[in-house]
Image (cartoon, rainbow, N blue to C red; front, top):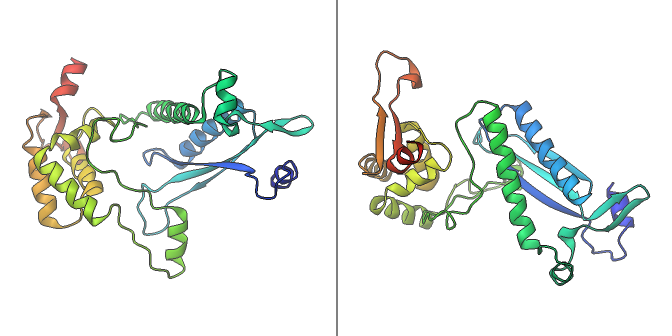
Amino acid sequence: LVDAAERAEKRSDARIAREFEIALPHELSAEQRLALTRAFAADLANRYGAAVDFAIHRPGEGSDIRNSHAHLMMTTREVRETGLGDKTLLERENRWLLANHLPPSQLQLKDLRQAWEHLANTHLERAGHDIRIDNRSHLEAGITIEPTEHVGVHATQIERHGGAVSRARISPQSADRNAETIRRRPDEILKLITNEKSVFSRYDIARALHRSINDDPQTFQNAFASVMASKALVELRPESTGLRGRDGEARYSTVEMVAIEG
């Protein structure tokens, strides 16, 4: 496929494939993540008439179990019976697209993010998980907490070969700003959580904080206390000593989610 894609181009520096990197929900099993990735690859292929290949990268030993992701490579040209044909719509110039009453590349990419969100949430629901992903940026969702960055496969490979790689989820400066934001507006962490699930536990709050601030124990405790004292937090079920493990944990939601779900 790569050889055919290279032969279809006249310029030696032409792009022959477009890469998509997607974070796979760690709540899904390996088989379910494979099915989800295949479904998205099929959607890309059908949408653009291109060939799509993919590889799933699982978390390495000792790394974050949530770092499961897939790399998809899509040819920049349509696949026809005689071989590779014209450039896909995603590779066309915006001037040409607009002249032909077609959406520009930015809108196409936004539509792809929405398609991925719908597919992922469908597979999560099918697997019985009460969790959803939200493709909107923090800014679009009205959240000022600075997002974390994905630690990619190249960083992992460098580390495995003895290289020094920062494994920080977030820069110290961003972590400090997030800690201050959470101190002043603890409901922002609750917004992050309810973008994924409507009912949650203390563990979910701790996990969200862990992704957003540094690992200093006092900073974490202060942030956790601020969130638990938030007026937006609603306790749905108190902790039960009669149940084992997380089944006995208290369950929470927010004032907004309770109002929406009646």
